[in-house]
Image (cartoon, rainbow, N blue to C red; front, side, top):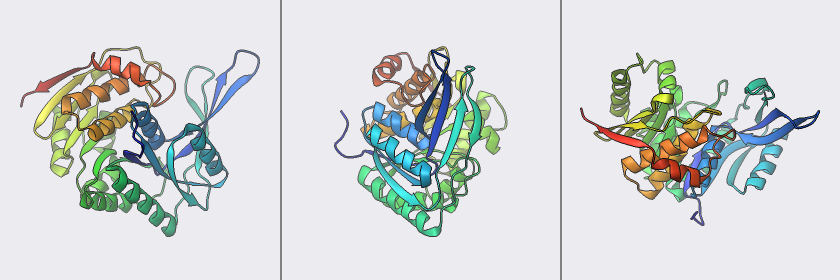
Amino acid sequence: MASDTPTVCVFSPSLLVTVTVESGSSDFDEIHFHMGGQGYWIARMVRELEERPILCAPVGGETGRVIRGLVRSTGFDFSPVELANASAAYVHDRRNGRRDEIAASRSPDLDRHEIDDLFARTLQHSLAAGVCVLTGRRAGDELPIDLYRRLASDLRAAGVRTVGDLHGEELSAFLAGGTLDILKVSDEDLTADGRLGGETTDDVWAAIDELSREGAEAIVVSRGRHGALARFGDARYRVTPPALEVVDPAGAGDSMTAALAVALVRGQEPEDSLRLSAAAGAANVTRHGLGSAPVALISRLSSLIDVDRVEG
């Protein structure tokens, strides 16, 4: 049962409006308006898993007004920072069965007052919730990278537990400021960052060990159809989900991150955390809606997840 007060604060620097065009049942197309962005999809899955997220994000302009209306319709706890400029948006065409982007705008630059407000809101709600999930910037966004280092330092000093769905500059900056309780990252992102030098299991373990030395206390690396490899302290695990047919792979990693945060709130052991995380990711790929898999399906799939302790 969800808490009466938020249990997970989600830091979402790049919240946006998504417009999706799909084929209708007549001569007219269907057009759907939704909230989007990594932080929103993670918060949505946290709520599906019956915890209570609060979303901290900058919003502004005409698209910001749309975001506020959509948030009211979802019933999310929301702590927006008002911007002078408009929030981002994108338009996707899915009439041919693919997700083709036909238009997109970038997130606005924040002035120093807006940055201070975003930092303060995130710290305030993280202190109240006890767990903070941190997400990265969209490509092209100009939010100062030092904000991640400062958040790492102050969240750690305040005793807030952290889950990062981070890579690249954001991950390096956060680890420079403090430690992460749990890092969720994909092998594709590690390769793009230059942290993963090959495709073998040994290569992934080497990257995991390096991240551990840098300050990530637990690391979960998703590997698509190969499942995931994870390290919690000195314990290593191989995670194998069932081979379900993929309808849409987008958002599976965000669902995994949300489940890891929920498991952290509930004090679950590593094996149970990994089962919940893998089940949430597996359930997500069977659907078109990102972060929308029902908790009943995730619960059933959890029993099908193999989590094996790896020696060495």
